[in-house]
Each structure stands twice: as structure tokens, then as C-alpha cells.
Length: 477
Image 1 (cartoon, rainbow, N blue to C red):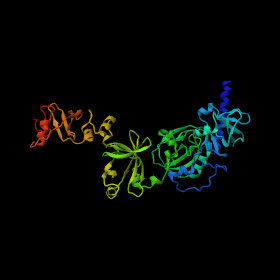
Image 2 (tube, one colour):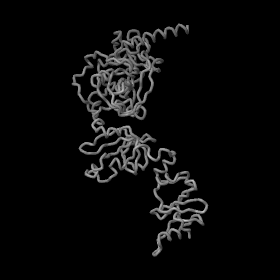
Image 3 (cartoon, rainbow, N blue to C red):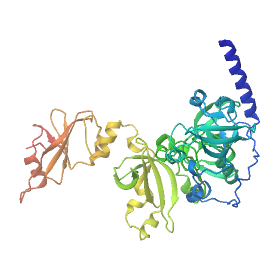
């Protein structure tokens, strides 16, 4: 009995994959061919194709969201079951009222025919199948139709084909820029296998094919870069029947929004070749500076310490200005920051926006990881916060708190670096003979007395190691 079930399952899979090869909505990253798909009259759109779509209103203009309450007769969907759907069947045959296997209906096109209140109090959502011309329905688990659809619920397994057809009309052969590093490649011609692949952001790609992805992310966009690499992303455009709330498209799921993976080339391509060369480069701040960052849905100004490392994700010209907005991804926390800069110093000095050199890229940023590249995370954090901790080298102390006003050598081999603070406290950093910090702490600072020289004043108020000398060799008093 078990062998027979396995054999039947294998035959079903063979039939299913054979059908998939002939389905123009199923596209793969290898041997891609442009599919020609007949669009039903109810799905046709009379709007003319724009040569250069505007990213800001592209989705709003072309991919309107329809809740299930607003579905119209004739809307087309494809059955795209996932693993869970193989165990729990979605549809019933309208003639027999018997459940139909999701595996058997896989890749079949369902045309919406409205809903129906039954005499037993249940609600049927009705469909006609384009492939076999049979009628099927999905029975709501509970409640009225209005209660169900207003909860942003939908019909399991169904990927909305209206978004796929519209995306083909507007995006085929378009040049885009990648906005994420993470994409996929197909590994099976007949199945759904894929592998994750990674490419740098801001890569120019051309749309080669568009097909069906999944219920949640129904538009599969296959692109090719200038080196001939092909990869894809499944994205949602209108979110019709996606089964996901808006607040779920964050962090790892953000790339499954169209704007999370792609943008039109207008913004970043409007910069010169020299400036565009900074894209994807690693930089570090040479001075502390204010940047904008988004958190909890709000944009806030944050003081970023010096020696903070970033990767430049985007460069966008500021309208009617000689400035550019940098989108910066911190190398350690991955948090996104924004900073307006000019790449020429004269553009800062001659602009009414600011005369502060901090807005000049060359003053603000250094290329690469900088002097912090070989330090530990704990040390980098201390340097950015202006603290000195045990184990730091002399160079790291200099990066954290700068040049001392005086160095004192003791007879026991300890050297102390002295820093005066505005609150009257003397910061003392003790170094061993190998130039590593042993201890750092504050002491009561020197008092100013009329007629006392600065060096004498330091000696009188110094309470460090006895028997030592100042760094110029003068014995301590």
C-alpha cells in the first residue's frame, strides 16, 4: 500500500512539473525566454507605458491595493501552494463539494467569480479554473464575508496575476539599480529549488523575465547584470492577497518589497562617474559629526563619533544644490544613516546652506576602515566614546583622547600621560614599558596660583609615582 502511494505521488509530481515547463508564468534564471501571456479583458490596462517611471509614485499609480472586499469578477490568480498547503487543502469542487488536492491544482489559474452566502450559514468564495473550466470554491472558516475580508485576510495559495501582468507591461527590459545585496538563483528547472546569492548594492541590472513567485511575493523579477549574471527576487507590488501585514515587511522581509530590492536608475545615475565611484566604498568618520537616522518610524539627528565605519549605499543629488545625500550603512550595527555632503570644498564655502567644513566629504570622511581596522570591538567602542581602557596602545589612546599636555616617566618603568579636563579633573593614563595602558583614571587637577609657572604648578599638584622624571628628563619635585 505504501509503495503504491509513493508511486502515485511520484506520478503526480511528474505530471505537475511537465505542465510547469509549458506554463508561460513559470520563469527561471537559466535559459530565460521572454514569455508572451494573453491578458484577459478584465485585466487589461489602457494606460500608456512610461519611458522612465518615477519611483516615488510608481507603485501607487500602477499597483493599487484591493482588499478582498473590493475584488472584482474576472480577477485572475495562480495556485502557488507552499509546504503547509500540501497538507491542508484550500479548494473544493463546486459540483461534488469534495476537497481538491492543492498539489493537483498547483500552477492552475483561478478566475474570481464573487462570493455566495450559503443556507447553512457558511460563505463560499467562488472561482472558475481557466485550465479545466471547472468551478471551485473556498469556504471561509468562520464569520461573514465582510468580517473576513476587512481583516486583510484572503484565499490561501493564490498569487495575484494582475500584478505580474502589469509588471511585465511596465518593467520588461528596464534598467534598474539593486537596493539589496541578497537575491536568489534557481537550481531546478522543474521545481522550486533555489540558492541564495549575494551581489553588491547599486549594481545596474536589466529586467529579463517576469513570472509568478509565491502567494506572499507574487511577482518574480529576473534580472541580469553587466557581467551576464542572472538572479531574481520575488516581490510584492500591490500586496493583494499577500497574507502579510504592512508592518511585517521589515528587516529581512524588506527586500521582498519592490522598492526594497530595486529602484529606477534616475537618482543614483544622475551623479558623475567620479562621484559614482564612491558607491559601495567603505569609509570612516575623521571627526564627530551629526547625521540623520530612522528609528521607530521617525527621523532623528544623532551625533556620530569619529572613527565610525560605514559603507556608502547610495548617493543622491540634493535638488537645486551642489550637495549629495549619502545613505550610509554602519559596518558593525548595519544601521542606516544619512548625511548631506559636497565633494568639492569650494561648494561648501560658496553655498548658503553652511560654511562649516564638516559638510566637505574630504574633511569628514577617510577611505577604508582607517586606523581602527586592527582594533578589537571593545577598543573601537571606547575610542568612539572618548574613553581609555586597559590594553590600549599609545596610538589608540591618541585616537580616543588626543595628545596629552604632559608625559611623566617614573623609575619603575611606568609612563603617565596627563590630560586636563574642563571640570578641573586631571585624566592620568598609565602606560607600561611596552606602550600598553595599565590603568586610566581621574585625579584632582592643578590649581592656578599667581606667579607660578605652568610646569612648576604641574609638579606641585602631581601625586603620581615617586622618583620619576618629566618627559624632558627634569626630576620630579
